[in-house]
Length: 299
Image (cartoon, rainbow, N blue to C red; front, top):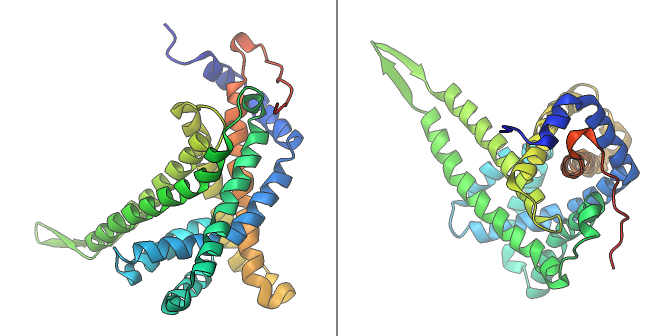
């Protein structure tokens, strides 16, 4: 009785070969070019998306608490630039009475662009699935808006949980006459919450975006891979922006946009690389026999 699958056994026996195979396939699929497209449209989508989510959730949660939570976890996506984005959101919310139906429709349209481009990029990574099955165009059209709703509900849940964890951090624990602050415990729990949320979001993307049914185990492999790589890169970016970067000297007033785009480019690259890991894992043949990929066709 096999405890692990033949695919997992193959990867564990040949981790270097599997990593090299994944990188070669990612390069053959023009992964960096796809990531650039996703990052560009993500830059267009991020502010309208956040505005819509904050406007909707501000009817349920205190606006200041919502913006504080959003700013904390935006640091995970755009290190060092969350304050600028949250400031723009706060400024827009202060003047949201001027929002008309045309502007609202425009924001809804632009907020969905990143998901549409991401779905198309995924279809290139998972070309062996595209050759078998195509998604109905109505599903593709509605999918971004369903995912926006899903993200809004996730942010609502995280805001409530983060608020409770922060409240724990303000308390003290008394044992045998000694008092210890729970601030450190609260910080660790908040970090774990953010990391778990990151893995959950990435796993959900891998479950939903590719055509066809992807197993939870495969999606979780990609989600954990992309999350761990991004955590490493995120800390490198924080250090680089704080210590070595001279972007503000070169780009001046465009610095924020450039840094956000750079962060989104790296994040999109790792997101698609995680998808490539899943794709190559799916096509690993048992008994060390490599499957030849099917031709990419969409008819």
